[in-house]
Image (cartoon, rainbow, N blue to C red; front, top):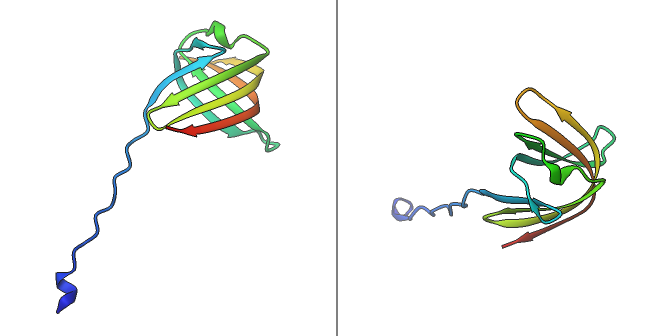
Length: 103
């Protein structure tokens, strides 16, 4: 009888994480996508997709700062290769350091 009277617990809604900005060596980069993944040999890599050529990414070592509404991610990376695809440019970096701060 009392089972029917129990209140259902409400699940807390997590706010959706929204991309705010990406800087490379202190310069804003107009990025479409910023992804952390692994190479086939299990070393971490960073992929940055942009609409056009991004001059700030044309360095041997780049310090990235990505901000979202929930966290700040700092990544130090060495340039590996750049690929020109049909509608965008893909920059691939090998990761040296990674720090993540929740806001």
